[in-house]
Length: 114
Length: 114
Image 1 (cartoon, rainbow over the protein chains, first blue to last red):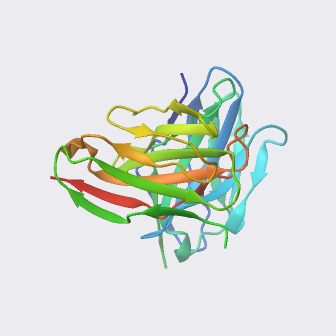
Image 2: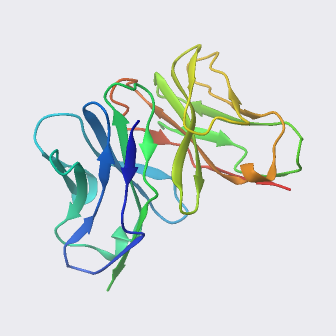
């Protein structure tokens, strides 16, 4: 069975500093990995995905994520955080052998202070 | 405008009174899915549909029903709602039922069951 963990409930970072949101996963096959963001009082938006290929995936709004197979991690990164990046971030995983089922992590609240 | 719509956006009901939350997408997407969001638990998948007439259970299907008679619509039915189904519900769709990304989410339906 697939599972995904976001070990930090909240990440605090100053504007202009690098931002990292951690995600680890467990699947029985090849993972399909995703990051979504939920801004206050708004719906969820897709940031990026990893299916195969280059371990560094670039996505929307300047975000990128690094797939690390040996550590079963898929951390989300942004080189320079903005106050507007303050939001709830979700990592999600689909087991390569389980079409249709998608499991989300509990979410990490990112707070960027001016 | 490409979008996923849900109705109603807010609903207060009483235990046992059947209700339906509608979901419609205008992007000709194959895949659709329902999630519930609860604090500290992230998003949990209720049901998903790979295509018309093809539906399957997610992680938390108990107490819910779905149907997919048309490609664009994927209603969520609560035959006998209970207070533990009080939650924020999201419908989502994706062009590809294979890689599941990106998923486009509806604005959410906030349900309170008394």
